[in-house]
Image (cartoon, rainbow, N blue to C red; front, side, top):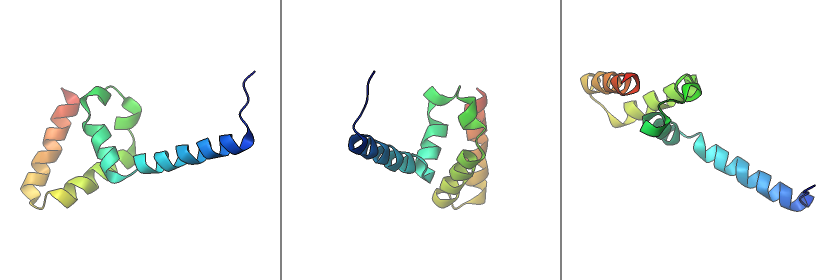
Length: 81
């Protein structure tokens, strides 16, 4: 049986939650959705928060409504192909 001392377990748990918080930022969600190696991850592509974050990133980086619509269409083509 393997046991960690409680102080070490607490440090590791704190590090995990700090990294998890970093992974749930807008850019990390957008990066995950645009990663071709994660296309098969249904839970990621069905995640409403991930889609919301991707839209937020696109809105902040694309100021032209036509270009924004084209980017969304390109993303849909990317996921479906």
